[in-house]
Image (cartoon, rainbow, N blue to C red; front, side, top):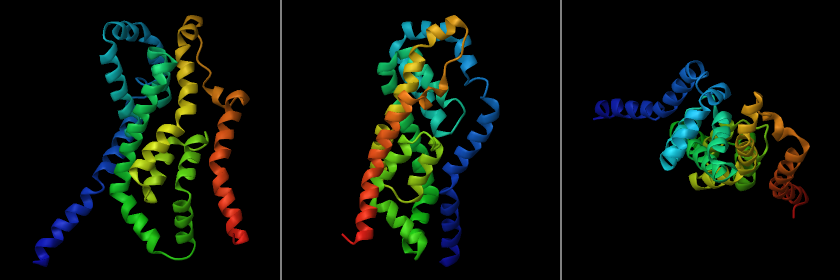
Length: 245
């Protein structure tokens, strides 16, 4: 009986990693093969065709665009920023930002679920049963999940891929991940979507968009202010904990 159970268990264990393996494989292949197709130059060269297709098939364009955006994010392909710009170029700041945020959230959730299914549940259980520093780190994240999730989404320095993986590895519930991802990426998405909405003028001048705009004071300071608000409850809890309140 045990001989029959063991191969099944082994297969199940390997199957848990298949989504992550698929994502990693497609990401590696896409990094080399799709770089030229998901670039600003490709958008500039095909802008008239894209606009004509949008004007003739608006809803189909929305669905195709969002599906491509989901795949880009889910498989960590190059071109997420260009996709966000394209959303603004094709659909204006609104509803372009809504399409961008929704598609990015769906794609991020795919990575989250793949990571949690393959590694997250097992790692979270191991961290929960451990002692010392590892357990304290896990407890600290659990005590401030909402704040930490918003914080890693708002801070521009945290890579999007990292912000998708870390919550899965510490046992964050899916609904909490989805809510904080959707709301947390809105500021950055609106900025880049608005840049995309102005690409017609940029194309006419033969220039490239200023993608560093998010680090300019008038944009960065409000985002850092939101980050500080997200971090404030964590600081207050820490201070109260030290005082024994």
